[in-house]
Image 1 (cartoon, rainbow, N blue to C red):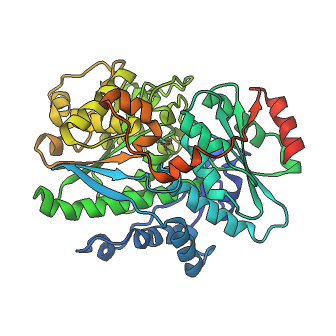
Image 2 (tube, rainbow, N blue to C red):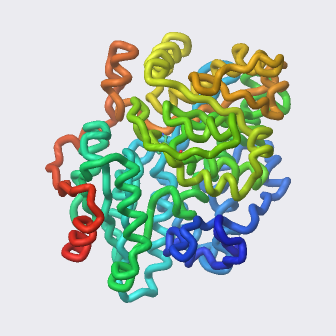
Image 3 (cartoon, protein in one colour):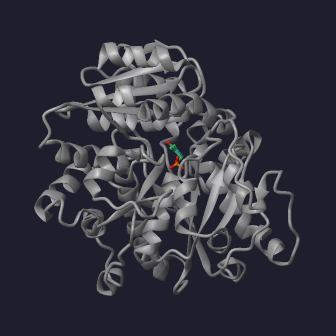
Length: 470
Ligand SMILES: *Cc1c(COP(=O)(O)O)cnc(C)c1O
């Protein structure tokens, strides 16, 4: 596969370069593949749902072709995914895709574990250590830290906004030791991201250290997230024959989004033939992308704090990839977009639980509510020309191509549930009156000692720390 750059289409490189550089420091752009090869019809039309690792291998193969042999790719995949992605029906036309069965109980394990193994594969032939810098608004850091823990030749520095993530998330980040350490920055997630981005464009630093990123900007985190869209949409398509008797349903992936890496991965899966009719981009009060879809103006802004804090992103980095893959008009045909305020998040957790019995986390709740509104009249109203105010919570005024399928009850939704509700226990319990059950792997973390280092929101201080500690 040849990879290029969102800002300069004349750039051509291999996977190794794209993965090890993270972003293109010469242009500030992000790497993307030059094509998205479709899986064979015989694979896509199997009468029995394939195994997840089978899907993963077939999808990854074209992107690593000529760089990672089949046997090594297979080991990477088997080693990365010893856990399941579960498709849970919660009503006849709604499936929850549970992506939180990995070690850190959030979907970012899928991307991070693949990336760690691919980087370690490429790093085998290097003499120098590789230093990974990662900014996190919550779950990225723990997924990346956990994925790289003990990986030889690579160390990881995680920056998180002090006091702006949940106590459990903070604990998960602060208890790493050895080749992984965390800095708690006095600032916001955007400040953390800026410190990391500045370091990547700092030539002094780059001369001295081999630096790489591990945010959702790294292409090796994005590609593996496409696996579960393919897997889940194939499973749901087959299940529909029994669950609701809808033949050829329009499958809508409803994605709770922050940096829009997850949604971009869905676009890749669809390009590769996943039976997905369209998407709903669901955000919290950080609605930069819904506003772009509504108005045509992309207006990045500072992030605001919400209960779905892993989505508190005002300047979503993967906007650049989406805009490189599709025109605004194409996006408006393919996506519905929706946003929900904090009050709506609590109400959604409550309503979802009351109506379906399912306990959903604050991120998944945004998606559940978007889908619930869409199929209970909001899309019909939109089609009939009743447009809401995009500045208020709800659907943006574009009518996607799949609107009629929803109106004619021919559509099913896949809600991407990105975190275990226990990670946001206090928010969930304020909505439903009880704490969700705590998985034992999270409980264990709470008993470990804290090693996070306090850090000013100042580039020079950060740089000095890097010089002294890498
Ligand atoms: C990171 C994260 C998101 C947002 O994913 P993006 O790829 O940044 O859009 C949603 N939910 C949870 C729990 C997350 O950790």
